[in-house]
Image (cartoon, rainbow, N blue to C red; front, side, top):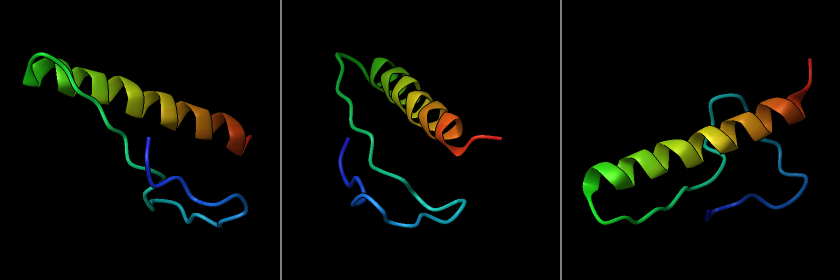
Length: 51
Protein backbone atom coordinates (compact mmCIF):
# COMPACT_ATOMS: atom_id res chain seq x y z
CA UNK A 1 0.00 0.00 0.00
CA UNK A 2 1.04 3.56 -0.65
CA UNK A 3 -0.32 7.04 0.05
CA UNK A 4 -1.33 6.12 3.60
CA UNK A 5 -2.57 9.24 5.46
CA UNK A 6 -0.77 10.55 8.52
CA UNK A 7 -2.31 9.43 11.83
CA UNK A 8 -5.12 11.77 12.85
CA UNK A 9 -5.99 12.77 9.28
CA UNK A 10 -9.75 13.16 8.89
CA UNK A 11 -11.01 11.17 5.91
CA UNK A 12 -14.50 11.98 4.70
CA UNK A 13 -16.81 9.20 3.57
CA UNK A 14 -16.15 8.36 -0.08
CA UNK A 15 -12.63 9.83 -0.16
CA UNK A 16 -9.73 7.57 -1.14
CA UNK A 17 -7.94 5.97 1.80
CA UNK A 18 -4.77 4.67 0.18
CA UNK A 19 -3.34 3.24 -3.03
CA UNK A 20 -3.32 -0.55 -3.38
CA UNK A 21 -0.56 -2.09 -5.52
CA UNK A 22 -0.14 -5.56 -6.95
CA UNK A 23 1.74 -7.54 -9.57
CA UNK A 24 1.12 -10.97 -11.05
CA UNK A 25 1.91 -13.17 -14.03
CA UNK A 26 -1.28 -12.13 -15.86
CA UNK A 27 -3.63 -9.16 -15.98
CA UNK A 28 -6.48 -11.32 -14.63
CA UNK A 29 -4.38 -12.51 -11.68
CA UNK A 30 -3.26 -8.95 -10.94
CA UNK A 31 -6.86 -7.72 -10.95
CA UNK A 32 -7.86 -10.57 -8.63
CA UNK A 33 -5.01 -9.66 -6.26
CA UNK A 34 -6.03 -6.00 -6.29
CA UNK A 35 -9.64 -6.88 -5.52
CA UNK A 36 -8.58 -9.09 -2.61
CA UNK A 37 -6.31 -6.40 -1.18
CA UNK A 38 -8.93 -3.66 -1.63
CA UNK A 39 -11.46 -5.87 0.16
CA UNK A 40 -9.05 -6.29 3.07
CA UNK A 41 -8.60 -2.50 3.35
CA UNK A 42 -12.37 -1.91 3.24
CA UNK A 43 -13.04 -4.54 5.91
CA UNK A 44 -10.29 -3.15 8.13
CA UNK A 45 -11.82 0.33 8.10
CA UNK A 46 -15.38 -0.92 8.47
CA UNK A 47 -14.31 -2.72 11.66
CA UNK A 48 -12.54 0.41 12.92
CA UNK A 49 -15.62 2.57 12.28
CA UNK A 50 -17.79 0.64 14.73
CA UNK A 51 -21.62 0.62 14.92
